[in-house]
Image 1 (cartoon, rainbow, N blue to C red):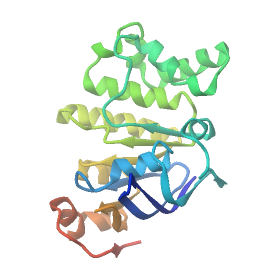
Image 2: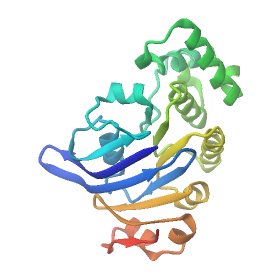
Image 3: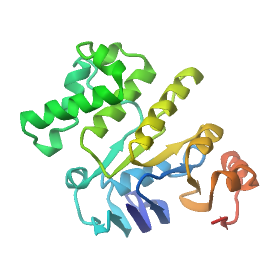
Length: 243
C-alpha cells in the first residue's frame, strides 16, 4: 500500500532523515518510535510532500507518487493527520468534517455521504455536530481530526503523535478510535512516544534515532529489545533488524 525507499530530507542544508525505507500493507498498522528530535515528524512531512525530499522514492498502492505535490497526494489517497490537533476551532464539528474534503472538490452529494459515514463511525461527532470544534475535549478533537482525514477515503492515513498532551484516559480513547479505523480496513502509519500502548496496537514497528532506522520488528520482538529503551534515552545504537 505504501512503499518508501531511501528517503532523505532536511531543512536547508541540514539533513534530518537519511536512508529511510519502510513498507505498509493494506489493513496493517505500523509505528515509528523514537525520542524527540529523532526525525519522526520530518519523515511524515517528507512522505506527504509537505517537505522537499533530498532523495528517495514513494509508492502508493503500487504507483510511483514521488513527484506529486502534497495536494495531489491527498487526492491520490494519502492523508496526514499532523501533530497538534489542527482544526478550525470556531467552526462547527460538521464544518470541519466538510473541510476535510476540500482537496477533492466534491459534489454536494459526496459531502453528505462522507459526513454521514463519519457520524456512523464516530457517533459522538453527530451529537456535537453543531458545536464549535474548540469546545471539544482533547480526545474528541483528535477523533475529529481522524474523522476529517477519513472523509477523503484515503488508502493510507498517517498520524503524528495523536496522543500528545492528552491525559491517560484520553490516550486510551484515541487508541480505541484507531482500532475502529483499522477494523474498517484502513492502513495506518503511526508516529508515537507512548511505547507500550503503541506496541499493543500495531503489527510492526520501526525505531528511529538521529534520522536513521536503527531497528525494526514485530511488537513482541521490539518490546524485549534493549534498542528501544536506548533509543529513547538518546544512547547511540547499532542497526538491528528483527524482521
